[in-house]
Image: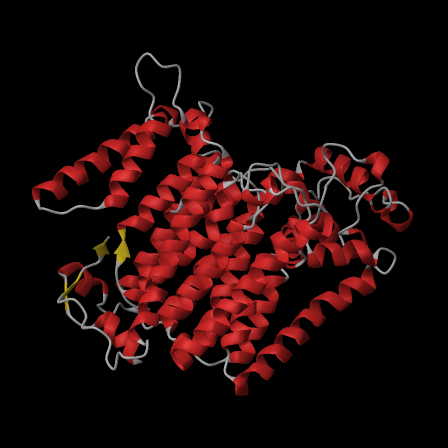
Length: 515
């Protein structure tokens, strides 16, 4: 254990912190995993199950692969034949490959013969033929259920990461998976929009980071290559990790990643040799191959073409690598300690949100929300500000609108009053703080935003939340998210700045919940 991790753990613990640090037997950890999975599935069931929104980006690939037509897995219909059911883009290949295998094993849609003879030359008529088959077979509802495995990959990736930080096989591990299963940005990735590949990519990335923390750089390269081939935002973790990797381990990291990518990409290109460009487009761009709907900071700059792509997709990766390079110069090998490494990839993930051209969905914040929770677990205490941030993200984007205004699903009456419940809860905490002489500015601002933006007041037709543009929420939520990720990192940098021979002493009391 390094000096920096010792600093995080020293001091007298609160009773709850001491309880969470107690080792657990294997059966207790397994019970915690099962409880978190049940919680995740129950939330999905109560909110209507997995969504079919954006499912066109993956289900056609899944069905084609399940029936052995890999050449047709990423083929778009001709421009004059595009309709509402046709995919405007395809996601990266790893999730469809896995989902296709599951669909084949479970015989989804087998009641109706698959239209293998109607796919046309070069798969030109594959999409309309498969669409008609899905309607007759009812395959869509069964196929989206496969997306639940995204949670399983995320959960085990988080478990591997927590164990690599020294907080596994104890209460912290169980608390981590339960908190992640409760996060709206996590279940929104399959409940409000069907993007289980985002959960899977995050899980694979966390497993890769766990290998890096254990100095198993070959396996880190394998897992991060798979993560990038699942959802390309994983480059924001892989690229800075390459920078901070020890020189003697960097080659094994790169070789493992290249070989893994080749084993996935080359067979796909060979199978789809008639349309290699469409396969490469899915591999390189994936679901990022779509234009934004306006309102973000980047959209307000009115960039076009290659400049827009460079700013939204390339610039965050370059900035994350520059940040990693600067940290290596300031921290040296300490950057590979759990807390600074977790903070580094949390800040890297937030750069995507700064330069995102389309920011209308809660699941866009999933990766950063997961990173912030794991950062707090690595530090040994959870910040109330992180939970407040997640709640505000939930209300500000489509999940919030769905929860507050939908009347088509069970429990709508309670959800309609969610903003009021949160506001009253925040006010009660503020009152308790006042009696104890404590003041938390973030909590005051949080309650004010909820009361003005989401609470329905008497004699007013509805809350004012629609008056806040997307740019407002981007500035508020992304800037505070960056602050929550960067604060522990800046603390490490200050501790090791010139003129400070010793880091400042840790507080006498380390609590589980803090500002």
